[in-house]
Length: 143
Image 1: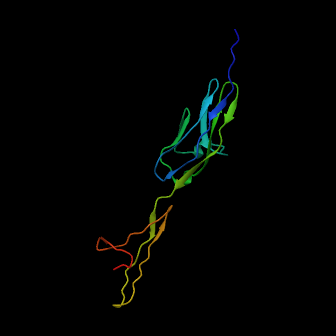
Image 2 (image 1 turned 90 degrees about the vertical axis):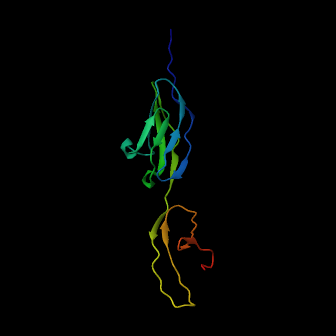
Image 3 (image 1 turned 30 degrees about the horizontal axis):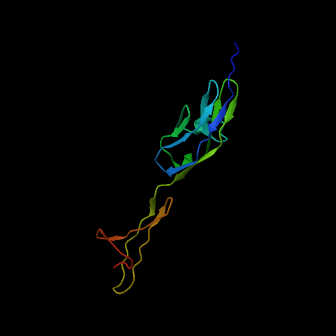
């Protein structure tokens, strides 16, 4: 009897993923071969500890709560009895949560003149603003 162990062949590559901070991200890969084990990492990484919050369970690499620092290329190394294969590197994109970085300040003006309020923010857009006066939405023109 002759038994032949199959080489590793990736049959479905992972796909790029973009989501907002704080959400999970999962990459999947499918392969055939004998005695397969899977290791996921940031592409070019020499240490899996660079993917601190990630766990690889068989064919899925999951980052439980993504942050801006997790953004980058990821790949999966699949090792079989006879060979090893590395998946394509795929991008994990992270949309930053909106944060107000500069609050408006009080303004005192003379009657009949204009008052200007400004707010600054950071985060991934598009951004829309809704100003309020006394808890009521203001429309364009601010009256």
